[in-house]
Length: 440
Image (cartoon, rainbow, N blue to C red; front, top):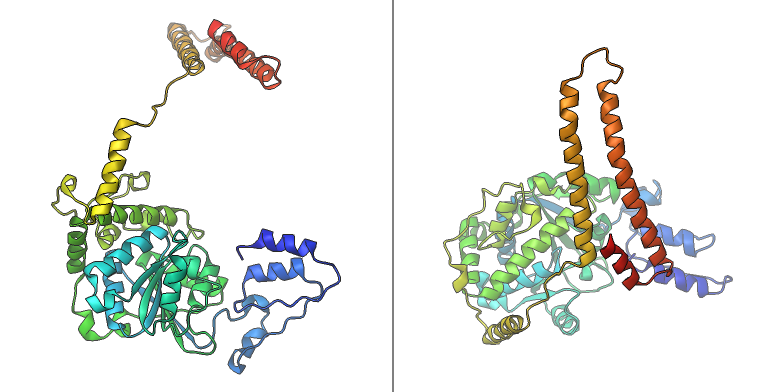
């Protein structure tokens, strides 16, 4: 539930003789754990409509986890088409209230700026808001503003997935899959509240379709497949293409270096999120076309990161742009970055310096490697001159030779271990340990 240690601490302080009422809109496995830990002889009272009573007979583990008034869909979208699909959907449902979930704070920052910066009409762009956990000062005001809107779009992370009541949300879009299957239920719960109708859409790539069956088994949630054509009007569907959206995003990033940097950061954060996903068996980084996904992000170049090593990125289309000439659109940002650059030039970060013990250790390793090499050279003529029938077999010669070398290594290791034990037991000081290392 996210507050398990705090709840357990509170339950330990409360008197043993008490009557406790626990109310929850969603039924999760963590809630069952809390029932076992914090309640004695609990009685479950379930309030639901008649058409879901059949599910209650199959036990608490198979109860329906989402409201009956909620329609759950999933759309198969290629990685390169994800941003195009989102923009097409938002344009088609401009008169409705929509919550869009992303995996990372960096993605919320980046796509909020993009949608506000020219990808949507000027009137529609004014209704775009972004919210995540790092926006501590603005978070309350942004939430209050969106809550009072009759139509608009909120881009957010899982900070909005639970414990938040936003009235009259028509659609929930999950642009990225949640890190945990439980959060899928919480995300969908932002719509279809208090008996109202609601719809939720999950974007999945062709390599992620096994997640649909996983949700059915793990959360007892059934998703119905829909195409984007079925969810948007035909006029909006043909208004833009994937390539036109990519070129437009790249042009926006070319005119603002800050957006270019935020795009790189958003892409890197998503790749790291994807690599550490709870369902790593279903979401495999090697199966995801990262080059095509970078096109959806509108990147001007691929970032340098270890996750991209060995993964083909032939589908990435890099524009012909001189990145060194990109400028910041906002003067305040440009001034701040210039001051930061000058400060780094005047006070560069300290470089790593090798200490004498480190150098001594490397020297000892080099000596051991040299001894092993000499031993190997000396053993080769003996092995070549071996005649069957001799009393000293070839393997025995090699074992005897290596043993002599290993005894010297063991002595060195034993001496080092004794010194470290003395230093740890405060029998010798750091300075004395340093002198002993230098004298070796």
